[in-house]
Image (cartoon, rainbow, N blue to C red; front, side, top):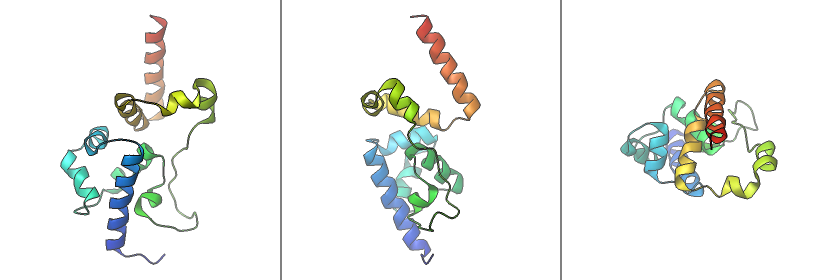
Length: 135
């Protein structure tokens, strides 16, 4: 792997910008999901600074890509940190169009839920189920 720090910084900036636009999010949306100041996120996209390892991991969960993909590093699959891709169960259960046609608020909720532990995700799921039973 022959890549220098300036190239990684440029890759991160470009990839974050492209992923954010693909998810139809603003810089503020992403920074809110991460729980950071919008200017910090903006600096990543403008190559002024780079995210920490933990922030890269959180971003990989938000955008469903590997940390290496965000950094633009190819290493033939060795050492990549992958986050689970789309769940076929969800597509069958809820329908692809319903999952992909989320409004901005729903996308923010999904991004926040992705940052939770599996145990906390189950708690959120139970709360949602309880709310739906009361309708």
